Image (cartoon, rainbow over all chains, first blue to last red; front, side, top):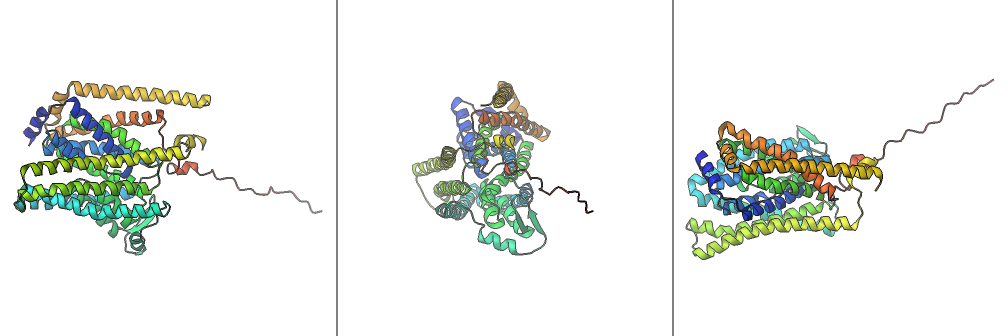
Length: 356
Length: 105
């Protein structure tokens, strides 16, 4: 395992194009993460693999950049009063169990149906979760923007909060009092999804909003705490096996630390439902991207038969669609930031602090 | 801009340059020994601490530089959602009538 990583390190040639690609995707991924709490990993890992990096090294190097990026983003948003640390810790604890169960499921599928079966399972999970959850998030954001842009507490969250099932936990920053038994499944599913599709935030953030009842602003900021804790644990695991290519990690980190802070600043300019707009849009486009990859795995399993050129075209289309998802997310964030900054002369936080 | 504001801006630019310099030095050092470092960091076992410590060090330097850079460029958090606690007016002392000395003769 170690030799494979060392060989991969020697094998990868860092050309200007490679460095520029990783830096730019790192920046855009950071921007999206700082804004919605997750994102970037779904493009960076396949992106690195397309540059010739082995899958394990790509996952490890990506994870090694993810936790410091999340740490910086969480710190920035904590300063804005948006992070619910207690909620983040509860979620991360139950997510850790979810990750372990997710890995067991993956191993079982891998041993029974091989690599193609495992890839098919990952892609179908991607499509199912992203279409259902992303579709609902997008519909909710559309409904809110039509009604003037003010978020209401979701009915499910309000109902769950009204059930007095000890132990009841009070999350001060979110201003939520809810039973521990309703927070555990949200964290568990976040971990399960993180182990399956590597983007746990696509379940964690909507879960915190619609099940627990935190606002989009607090849910997306708290997701960064979860990403930090889980990313750190994952990195230790991969680094012990010598899978981290530090050069790739540092290049991505260079871009993402600039992006994540810009994304965090962006949350203070826009209306809260914009977080849902960006998240829903990205999830739906990523779902399309993964759907394009399904015929390839079905062909490998012998269920369908597609020609070589058609499969190659679908693979390229899938990767390009993923890049488009990230690009569209970044475009919406930057556009709404510029629009908000132009529309009202806002006093900066620092100036207000000094004034106070 | 007031003299105090000008002074603060100069201080911010200086801090940005210092952290930018530290970040550039870190990256230059890392990439001038890129192959050796990558091989050393990929040995696994106890060597796992190396990439983790490295990303922490880079994050502190580059994170501080990035935050200050955005501030220098005029991109800072708006108060709409940020630091709401500081925007609240300070509690005013309760107005009470001063006690008067009454002499009932």
